[in-house]
Length: 309
Length: 272
Image 1: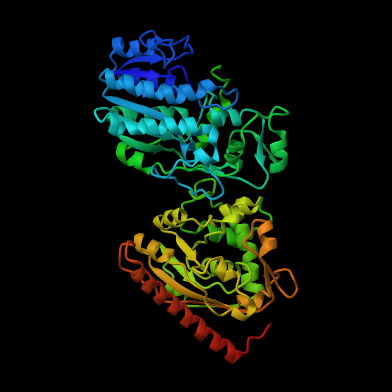
Image 2: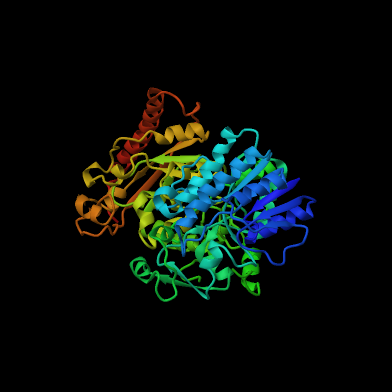
């Protein structure tokens, strides 16, 4: 297959591209960011997903399949750009796919779609509502992108669309939401709260994406790996120490003393769990993760340094 | 680490039919050492402090999903704690009872962590389904917070039952084991519930005893377990059908309470 990967320069994008190459596929990539040491046989286009130049990649590159990972997920330094990339970029990818004969498309989404709160259940199934819209409004653009991609299943039935809601990823690249949270030697937590955290090795996340593509999966699926563990245990497995802070004080400290400036919704994610049920994806594809939580955390801990960026 | 953890209790915790991983954590976040610490303390109340008699524990299945459905007898959740203790200390092999915690608890620091590490998840239908589908033992009090709010004089009565548990049992094909708990109202007699003050703290109410705090008296407690009831159906039946099932279970529990009360009267409800 000829596979177009959007957001190919991101940590999982790179791994997906390399796995696809190793599996004998031709790989094209779109990213505004560069990938300096990319293998020469991967065809890179440094363009914006929403621009005309990206459509040209579809027209001239003629991909059979698309993996859409060009979403902005970090919240620090957010701009109006983010909404446009996440929602309008997703729309552009499916419209181009529809117009240029793409047969398979995978949307790489996140488990934070389900949101969290004191009354939110463990083990969300795919039909649970996107509570993130109210519990964490800053994620609304990602929820919208997820639902938009899912609607392609009936709007563009000729494309096999798979929407994957993947739990946190962690690994040697030391990039991503969870890695950012765990980056320092001391990790702030909320005193008296110790939610379950669910995470997957970044290589295993890439395997799940490649598998969904190769199987021509249709539908919406949660992707999870090892059983969730309490945040306190995750912090110690990563060789960090926990600094429990009472919630009112935590709110005051946000944005000061090296703590990131986070919206209030983000606090809920260190207070209550977001845990998904990944059994439907395993049943549909036979997916098994390769690395358990301990191995994943120790790879994260022992990696020399981040990938940069 | 092992402060207040009895070695025997920890050994028993390890024998629970719960898929603990090598960190001693199960998929719902139950943690072995914290569970053992809680049960060590609870075990002292269960074995030493109260004079407790358990009847019919053989009706609780040794494995597989089941729903224990019983009455609240007032005060705080002493009944749930003692049922949990009886399943752990008086069953061979021991079993872990999962209660459905009041929603406000998950907002309270430490109470949130504590309930979650002990398998007492927030009372949500999704949690009940997940636990039953994992073949766990669920403790259900269909009277809900209305039941714990009972004052001393109403301790041996039943208030209105919710109906959700019957639909849940039908949907998940779960047998129901009715039980009655007696003596909770004597241990922690509630004279008044402070509703307004409770709401200020995000709780449904704050119960007051004659000595203000809900410190339990040393009294005789009894748990009566009855034969399992296997309900037939899909869970999508009309309300009348469901209410019939609820009434049948409620009258079984009521009969257990009545016979228990008359035995207690014969003995005199003596405070030890």
